[in-house]
Length: 508
Image (cartoon, rainbow, N blue to C red; front, side):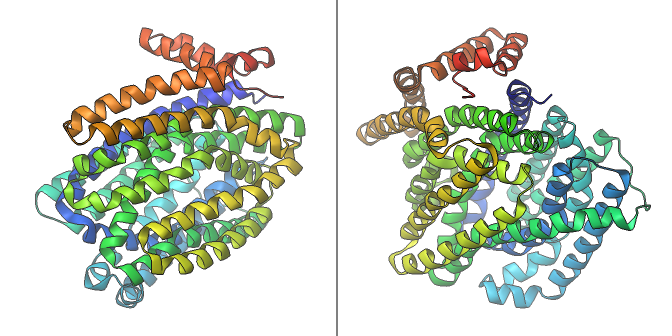
């Protein structure tokens, strides 16, 4: 049986790997960003508009479809891999042939046209990784996934840093991504112990088509929603402004990969296994939601509070223009844990059509508000995107209520206490940074701000969410003692109904 405690243990392994990858990626980004500058980084961000969109078709959607299936056969895996690889090769050829036209349309100039054919080489690699990734997720082998991610991230970062120091400029970013994806694909095939074949039935392919088509549409609209602001920013405000925005998005994305992606990766397949048991689905969603809220809020809002000294210190003074963008974009952390759980419920319970409809609505809102905000500058565009994300929580909350019985009030209440504590922490930390920043060295200021923020958050958590605070303190004590067995026991104990109340991860 899939329990909240089992899922939290899996999420912990996944989060540990993502945290290591985040730290390595942050170091690599700090080094490379100093060498390439905001404009070149903006050009690389534009390459994601093209390659990332194709990646949804060739890897992201097939992986999600295989994970969601209740019954999976060898023919499903073979059909999915062959179709993904064929589409990846076709996309690579089309991007290479149309690189000049795509670069002109996106406003990336000759630099973008130069890197696109090579950058698109990651597509066949990600297509090959789609089935092994899905199989490992279905088997809840997140420790293995975390290890593969970590090794690939380190090797990619080392190559990227070396290339940047050697003067490769924009190509260092391309090399980092290609090496990371190649190493990850090789490792996933090795640890998944799965070998592809050519045999599959027509019925196997037909089983995947319906969910895949809707998934392509939903993820495609989501991706268009993510990339449309980049296109409009580059066209109206220039690639340097896009570089600032892309850096802020990268920080948000890396923090999300540590805190929220692991939770989604375990919650979605967990819900797929119990999708016929509404009560079990409600308990899983509520448990993961509460656990994620305790961690996500302080990290995102804490980054917003210390962005002033952090960004110039880590990335260089040329990136100071990204500070207000980072601060506004990190406000998404207030709702991020709720949005993660809502999306996982909708997809895990087999309702990709609902996701598709919501994604279409969100894209319309993004296009409208971004166009309205563009004349007012980059910060206004960023604020508009935060507003869109807040509005979209409403239809998703209704979806979750219909699928699991977890009411909208309960969903909001799940994150209310930790969010209030995180807001208190962020306000106090920001005040300290503003007061002490004028006379204190940046490195010392950051160290003191982080320590102060952690202390204030724990104190505020005791006030606003005492049960969650007790659970966090117990987990921290286990970590400080090096008691990994005790930590695993604590996480597993969170799955039992009589322990959830104590851990601040309630099920009712």
